[in-house]
Image (cartoon, rainbow, N blue to C red; front, side, top):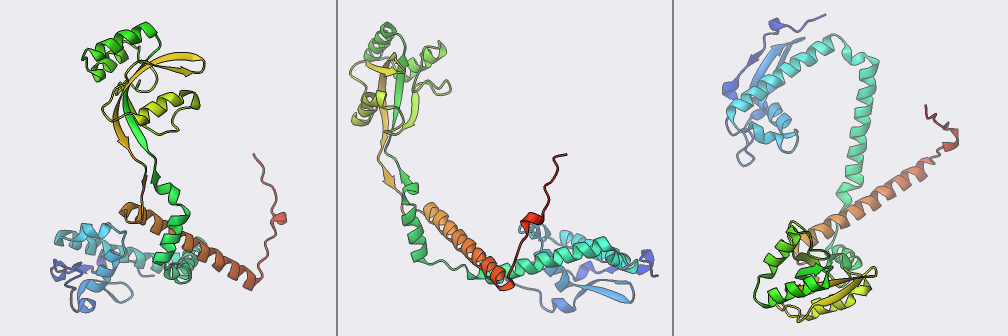
Length: 308
């Protein structure tokens, strides 16, 4: 049995590897005839520049970028040659005949064949039209609608006398945001705008953010002009308890219906349309195969598995 050892005469020829080996615009000419490594294993074995280029390009999407400089290319050529030596030794020892290897080879081959069939029968047939994309968009148009929203600086307190005191200070010119921060620090701030990380800021509110018992609050918030502050303290009921609210309107964003002119909407709808077509083609392929082969599966013959 031949052994692959240091006497296999491995030789690499890094000087034959050009800098621009992976440059798509200027491909290396005669790469098939340029030998970059050779060794003895049941006769002389050679690795060509074309083989290395193909090997690198078949790596994961981003890995080839690692091999743009000559030093990395020379490193890869050595690794590739050593890998061939290991493979040669494994074959010399007939490891490929072992049952486990045979089983895994069959499984890998089956996977490759199935993937190739799926690519031909499904992936290559995914051809969505503008009409398909438009129909998908219309069917789910509401997903791309943004509600009318407002944002407030809001102070809500549980005590009416304290609310009057705060309201008077704001009317006298005290900054509402600073007041909200002070009330947050003392633990008095509650309700909308009580976030300790951003006291007073309610975030964006829609017309249905709060329950109907707070409808008056919602109606005023949407009816007021941006920059306007409540004329008086508003009493709001929530779960049978009275709260006292003062707020200023900061923003009012109208309802917006995003269309396919929005690049992100188009990207999402196009991708989903392709997925739906892909799923339909896949389902149809399985149905055809099942019917043609008269597939029968006997689930009743599969025993229950013990929990132990």
